[in-house]
Image (cartoon, rainbow, N blue to C red; front, side, top):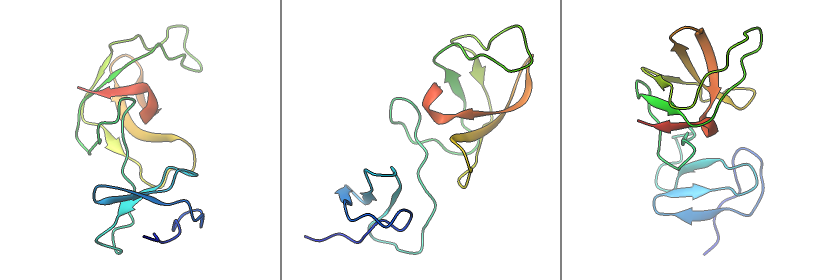
Length: 112
């Protein structure tokens, strides 16, 4: 069965995973049944789908530019907000106690 080209990068290596079509070149995911839903799925480091308002836990120490103390492993972050069209890899907007507002990559957090 031939799948459509990726709407994000236009590559033809698309494959199906349940209801989703996935492009292995740019990791873009979209619904196979509904072509109008262009919202990408954002997953944490272990593959859980993240949603706005979720709580996550940091899975590795993160150096913070301008601060002498890093964000430690196990730091819990509440009420995240996802950024679906982020120009860089930082697709989570949140507030961390002691550090303030910042953006995180979904690859360094795990859903709590």
